Amino acid sequence: MKAKDHSQWWTCLLAVAPLPLAAPQDAAAAGHHGEGMPPNIILFLVDDMGWQDTSVPFWKERTVMNDRYETPNMERLAQEGMVFTQAYAAPISSPSRCSLMTGANAARHRVTNWTLLKDHSTDVDDPDVSPPEWNMNGICQQQGVAHTFFARSFVDILHRHGYYTIHCGKAHWGAEGTPGEDPVHFGFDVNIAGHAAGGPATYLSEQNYGHDQQGQPVSPMHTPGLRKYWQTGTFLTEALTREALSALDSARQRRQPFFLNMSHYAVHIPIDRDPRFYEKYVTKGLSSREAAYASLIEGVDKSLGEILDWVDRHAETDNTVIIFMSDNGGLATSSYWRDEPLYMQNAPLRSGKGSLLEGGIREPMIVRWPSQVKPGSRCDELVMIEDFFPTLLEMGGVRRYKVPQTIDGKSFMPLLTQVGHQPKRKTLVWNYPNVWGNTGPGISLNCAIRQGEWKLIYHYDTGEKELYNISEDIGESQNLVSRHPRLVRKLSRLLGRSLRRMKAQRPIYKSTGKPCPWPDESVSG
Image (cartoon, rainbow, N blue to C red; front, side, top):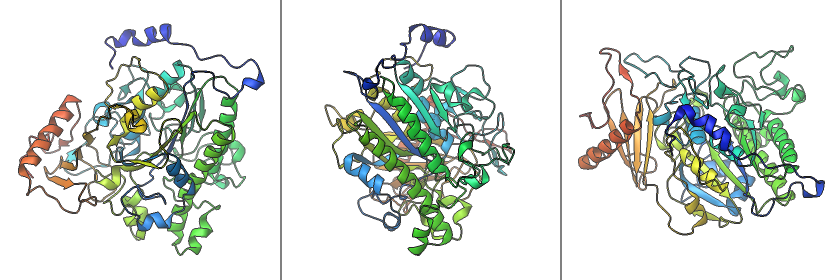
């Protein structure tokens, strides 16, 4: 859907948008859905969690990492819901989160790298190419802000249709000093600790979550608010969970459905030790750094369990959707792991965060919705991060809405309910014309397409192409470009046309000042 007149869009919206439902008049009605009321929705989003950072197998067989980590609440969620084995996101945080909020592919919204400071690109210098003028200030519901993508969030639409909306944790949708840095500007009634930063300065209350003793931030990555937890020994993951549960208690006093965006900063670096779980993993034989990372994972899992318990304890189970997802691949490409076994943490997938190989974009995803989703079920169809936008609105009973942006996402509701026609998402597209900084296979300056079982990666700077059959070679170990030249040409044309249609950007050669060729213009591969 796309609004025809952007200049009149917001004024018209405010004039016709439905008001939130009134609060209950008596305490006995608090927390109970009215007849015909849409479900509560909880999106449990983990930062940088890899496909294998869990005891739940998302493949046809268990792996070493599945047996290393203890995530009993993810197991519980999987037993009570549907596991998605081929769920995808962008290789970096901000692009994924902006696609989730807007329903637009990263190639279209052009927030293709991570954001932080206003008008400041986070790209690392490359000797041969320059990144394009991407939207380094993120997304924005306000027009006229330079280097932003003007869009309306699904949260704002849910809010206008009667949902009480809560954000808790990492936001990372807009640069510091722009409207997009504040979750309230996207339709949230409550913002807990969300701002421009994409990670925490520290998880430790002993360091005031990144503030000095006078309460001033010591890093752009400080975690705002949460002052009552400073110097209490409360790990950041636990503090966020407590605040989310308190917000849910408040939401229960209203006679309206709620949406909670439970967006943890974990398991993003720094790899601080969660004292509740660290020693257990040392005892299991992990190195100190591996044990610290495992403790971050189990801390997130404990948070999930506490939220599940809250929902069940308040008899909200049947009318609450819970979705578990990560925003990009695991930290295998981080310099943190160069001398550690976790350099291979995503195996059998190759590479990790920042890469268009499977390790950087394939995510753990689970959905529980007792009234709609069969317990213990699995879905092998392709799902992309922008698909959440139309899906969450459909879950909330919102089928008609106006937005200024083009929606690339497709609702996966038919996959959840298994009722009626179940369209298959056959093609996925990624664009990453930026230079992230870390090194490793498939990182930076590339684009990719997945169609059916086949995946093509194109490197802008070199013109090289990689072709893999994902169903037969999930580890992308055999580049089949030379064996299937016709397929390479077909996928190159489809990828090039898709990128041009979305007005995607390309890197620029420093030597000539000209953009790198599109994948269907390159003679390599």
